[in-house]
Length: 432
Image (cartoon, rainbow, N blue to C red):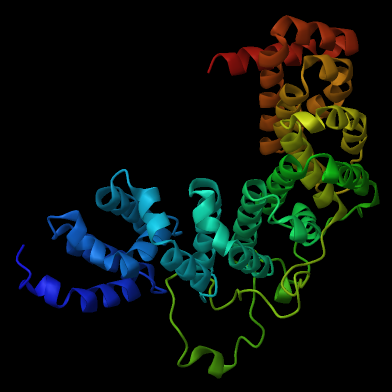
C-alpha cells in the first residue's frame, strides 16, 4: 500500500473517531465501530503499518473483549485474534500506559456495563501481563478498584472484588498496606444481597489467604465461625423486597426517586435498551461502606457466603485443617429452619459440600459425613426443585468421591429408611 493512500493521510483522524465509537454508550454503535475498526486495520497489509494506530485503538479493542453485549464481545475477541495473533500480551505490555489510562477512564463511565468490563480487564492485567509491566501502575489500579467497590451496580462490585483479589494474589507485598481496607470490603461482599457477589467475595478472600497465609487466616476463620452462627439470629420472615425505592442493586428493581420529574427525562444521555446506567451510579462520595442502594444484609446471607468461603479455602492447603474443624458448626447451621430462605442456604450447602469434602480429604471428612445426611435428604425431599436437584447431585458427587458401596453402607447405618431414596437417586443420576 502506497503512503499516498488516504488511509495513511487521514488514518489518525479515522482512528480517533473509531476509538470514540468503540467507547460509546450504545452497544450498536460499539459494534458498528468495531466492524469498521477491523476493516480499517486489516486494510494495511503489513503489521508495522497498522501499529501506528494502536495507541488509540488497542485499549478499546482490548476492553470490548469483556463487554456485556454478546455481539460486541465476541466480535472484539475475534478481531483481537486477527490483529494481534499470538502477540497479544506483548502488545498490551508495549502500550501498557495507554491501556491502563483507558481502563481507569472507563471505570468512571456512566454505563454500568462499561465499568464492569473495565474491572474485568484490570483483573486480566494482574493475572496475565508481566509483573514488571503492571507494577508502575499498581497504586492507580488498586485505588480505582476501591472506588468501584462503592458502585450501585452489583456486577461492578463483583468484578471489582475479583480484580482486587487478583491484585493481592499477584502483588502481595505491594498491596500489604491496603490489606485491612481490602479485607473489610471482601467481608462486605461476602454478605451481599446477591449470591454471585457473595461467591466473588469468597474467591477474593481465598486469594488473600493464599497471599498472606497465617497472617490473616485466623481472622478469616473467625469470620466464618461467626458467620455460620449468624443464621440463628435470622428473623422468621427473610426480607426479600425491602425498601425498593432505594432497594438492593438488582436489575429491574432499582427505582429512581422522583420518577415523574420531567427534567429527569429531557436532554439526557441516551443508553442501549435494557441498560440501567441512568439508574445505577458509580462510586459514591460516602465512602466504601455506602449502602444507599442496598438493603442491610440478612444474617442467613452471611452464613451462605461463609459456605462459599469454606469451599474456596478447602482447596488451600494451609487452611484445610481449620475448615475441617468448622464442619460440625456448618451442620448446626443446616438445622436452623425457622426462616423463609433456609432452603436457599441448603441448596448452597449441597452444591459446595462435595467440593469441601474433596478439598479436606477423605480422612478428615469421613468421620463427619453421617452428620450431613439429614440436611441432604431433607433438601432432597423438599418441594423446591433447585434445592432438591442440588441435593441429588450432592449425593452423586459424594458417591464419586467415596464410592457407592461406602455411601450406601453409611446411610444404612444412619437410617435404613432412606436407602430406597438413595438407591433411586443413584440409579437415576447414573443413567444420564
